[in-house]
Length: 76
Image 1: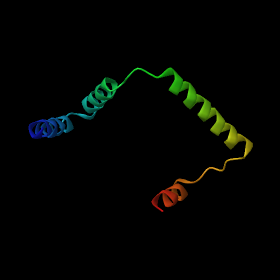
Image 2: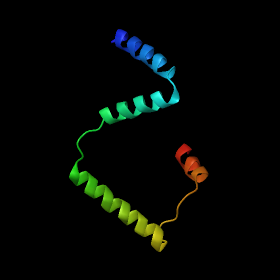
Image 3: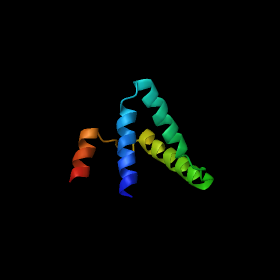
Image 4: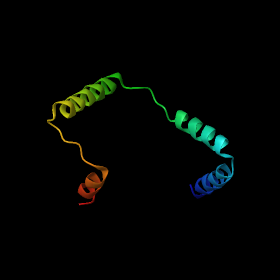
């Protein structure tokens, strides 16, 4: 396990030496490798929830928060 972490750290150091375009391509490839099949039921549920929340914003029943206010509430 330790050697895997050392290899990961070494790989990261090497990747950070690449030009920005190469780093972006590498990042895109790594993210793409994490893609998994989409759960159609979950996707439909999220779409429905998003539409419900947009409706609340449109009809005024929900009030958006500024980022500063949201951070205050999250931080406690």
